Amino acid sequence: MTALLAPKRNSEDSGPRWSLREVRLPQRTMASVPFILSLGVLLALGMVGLLLLNTALQEQAFAVRDQQKVATQLGYRVAALETEVTEARSSTRLAIEATELGMVPNPYPAYLTLPGGDIVGNPTRMTGNEVPDVRYRTPEELAAIAKQREEALARAKAEAEAKKAEAEARRAEEAAAKKAAAEKAAAEKRAAEKKAAEKKAAEKKAAEKKKAEESKKKGSGR
Image 1: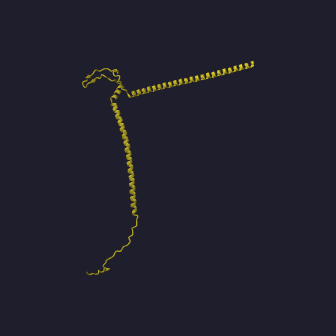
Image 2: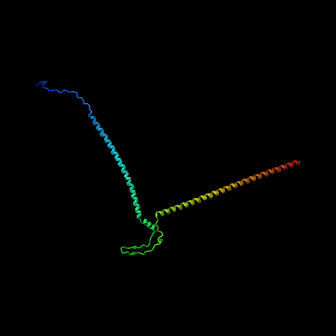
Image 3: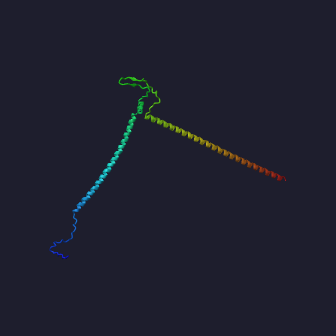
């Protein structure tokens, strides 16, 4: 092995050398201010738009709820009208209206065949007493009957209360009479006892007086 010396580099052959230098940051200019303002305006417009959208949705929700209430009320009204129509078409209602017109139930119906015009059955004039149990009452008549029944119950209740009050008054009078009689008997008893005591006291006093007189006579006789 042989050791060779490395050739020395010539300063001329090395080429140009770059030197480092300080780079200053660019100063902020007024050009960035409009961008920030534009961004803030966009954000504000977005918030306002969201608020308006939320308000509109709430108003629509309230309107929908009000319309649902109206629809529910109209449904109830339709159901009530259907009930009235069904009641008006019922046989009971027809019978009531026929009764109001003066018609009566006919247990002997007769039928007319068309187009021939033949009569099936025996036509009979009705007097109104053929079927006395079949009577259709109008709402006014039912209300009058109910009112009469209530008045009768009220009268019966008033009579019962009057009888009860009279019985209580009679019992009170009897109790007062018994009490007065007892007080009178007690007063008579006390008067009799007092009279007996006075009589006994008088008899005792008379006996003592008589005894004293006898003693006095005996003393004077001696």
